Picture 1 (tube, one colour):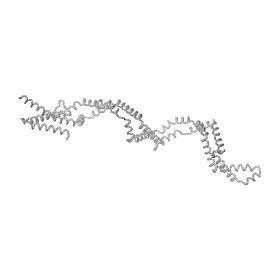
Picture 2 (spheres, rainbow, N blue to C red):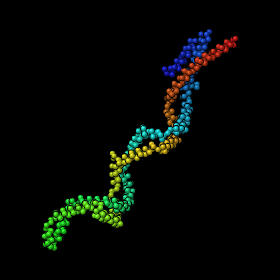
Picture 3 (cartoon, one colour):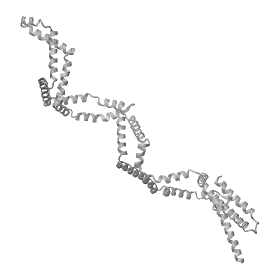
Picture 4 (cartoon, one colour):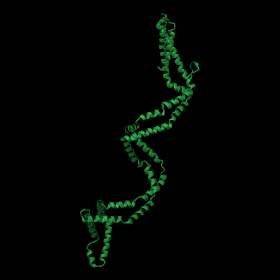
Length: 409
């Protein structure tokens, strides 16, 4: 049963009881009950009138009734002040915020609530959205002068000199020499080398046979193919022996390679040529076009190159945050200071919001709204008024009766 029905029932019972016990004098119990019902009726009616007077005009009485409607402005300002200055004051809001361990809450969210994945994906989505709106050609045009300047400043000559220094070191020189030997072994059996060898043999044979018949007679026993094959086999033997570390050819070859590289390192013309070549390459490169294509296809596109690196970086930073109390304390302090600043800056919005919300309602809507919030409690006041009135009425009746009897004695 609704509280209002209970209050109405209590009032009705009080009225019926008061009427039913009227004129039944003679018995102390009936007299006491009658006064109890009578007092309950008076208390119930008084409370009913008081409750109704808040929201309307009970029995058409306008004096000191319809309190909400007549005092709307004052009541609204009281509600606004209560909301902004008492219930949601700056001190109360920050007191609640300060009690929270925001750093620990963030760790819990990141580790056990799926926050890590959501944070990483959100960051990637934001960056992809930002990169998709980038004007590739405009960005490339702005970056081109800086890229050209960086290429000109690139220490290619110094780097090449350092590379030559590394090549002269013993283990590297041995490896390079063996690599050259292996390349030579593959080269001597190539068709290009064999054709070149045959041409040179034919040229040498012609030159050698020009001055004597005996030379021509002797060389007639050896054709070009035989000589080429003999030379090829001999070259392979020499090169194969040169791969052995304890072979004299290997030591001499390595030393010759080191001497060659050292001489190359000391040649200033080499660096001049390198510098000219670098300038030539930079002038030939279409830097702006290259940058435009790179931004369009590698930074945007369906699979930007930077996504795995961003995810790795974010996960690394999250791991550091999760295992670092100092970072958590800094995040906690930063967010609380941010909240304090925002509360200080926008606290007036609370009063504005409550005032605007209440102003949007008509008098009837406001009355209905307030009554809906306090209706149950107000009806309980009526029920309690009837009950308390009954007990007070019966108590006063007993006191008066006993006093009369004692006075009569």
